[in-house]
Image (cartoon, rainbow, N blue to C red; front, side, top):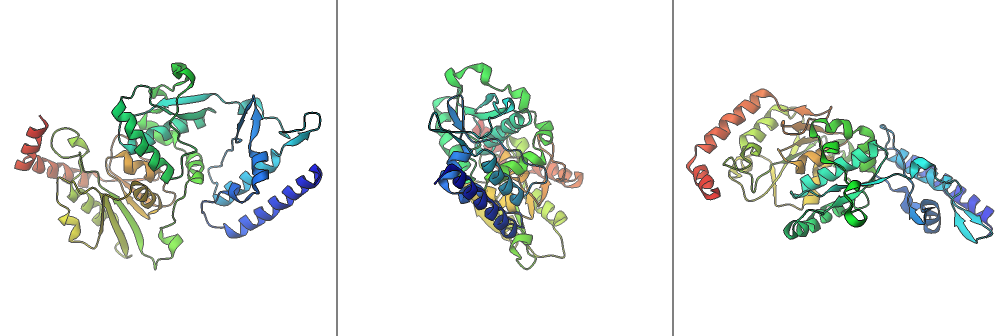
Length: 375
């Protein structure tokens, strides 16, 4: 088949795909148009040769982009960058050379030593900073980590794979680990201004790579039943001693649910946490709530990203996926991160009640024993 005929075939295929996409994906669903393009054309169109290396072209998504727009742009990009044949060399070459702006400098962050929520949040912040400044985020480097922390990277990688961000968030180091390639933490890790980095445009881009089950009422048509995802950080967090400022008692979450959930519509509340808890879970068992303890981490993130209502804890593990929830109401207890513009901040009345409850728990004999064991 001649090259001209191949190109006509590609254009016809693209036109049919775009028409099908417009009809089938009128709702906002995650759709990877690349998977539907014939493999030979995808490889030729999306792998652009630049300075001896191949890479996928960069695409920008509008703040109002939905799945249909993302799919159409990816398909259109495949046609625009379809390579031509160099008769003298007998090799494929890009139809349009990449402009200088596409040869972007790669930057890295230093991998944190925290749990998966904090590690992924930090990587997303670095990625957003690079995206905003026309840089390429190449990954988090374990340059200063000890052996025990390096072993935890496998758990972080598993969660990243489960939420389909393995092509966006990588663990990698610059050649020779040159420090000039690293972002300074002060450049991107200012959580007070995170809403400036995590723009609607950037969040749409990140969501386009992910698979998020549509569990909210509008998508499921579940007889108007609202889905509510509550994350409670427990385990190593207690009201006693170290990290006590991050502890939120059972009463805090119950007050939020009683205050903010609609009274005229049925709700399905799921509480995600750990078996190991300073307070017993009986407060929740007495209500028509589902307790999901020690659940797969990716399942918790999927639930948070797709719920109608999200109640966060003082933890990056719930704050980060809540930031990627497209349509839901996020009920946020003030912590180190400034809330995103569309979030609802828990009011002073509940916060004051929580402080009094924590003081009561600290006076408890079991808390005194816990403090003694930490010393």
